[in-house]
Length: 191
Image (cartoon, rainbow, N blue to C red):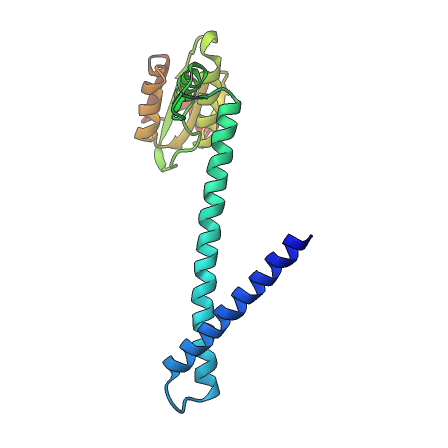
């Protein structure tokens, strides 16, 4: 209790001392004969600079705290190990997590560009690659294509180059056929 009172008293005195310093600096900056408005402006300016500096310091402290919490959680989860000299290394479990995250599927949204040509996408992806097949269906739907059969989709949008690259990176491009129709034929009814 006594320590808390002493702490509060020291904080108040520090704040009062800083206020006096800000006031004296404001008087000196305002110049002889300055009006109350100019003096008030200079004082507020100095207080504002000091408060921003305090906020920056609090922000740095908060970021440091969050980083420490994040590292603690990673250690707790077994992703990091501490060596004898207190250096952090990635654990075996952490290396497995890295591999897992590298195999993560790409985003599901690409830039849509309308075209007058009809594009047909057909795919036959094996069951063991179900996750990738579901990803592909969602991307095709997001590109504005409509399903005309279980694994056949049609639309009037261009296929983005990034999408083709992602199919290649996922190693499923060989299971996908993309056709552009110049004549609609019986597809007129569906378009």
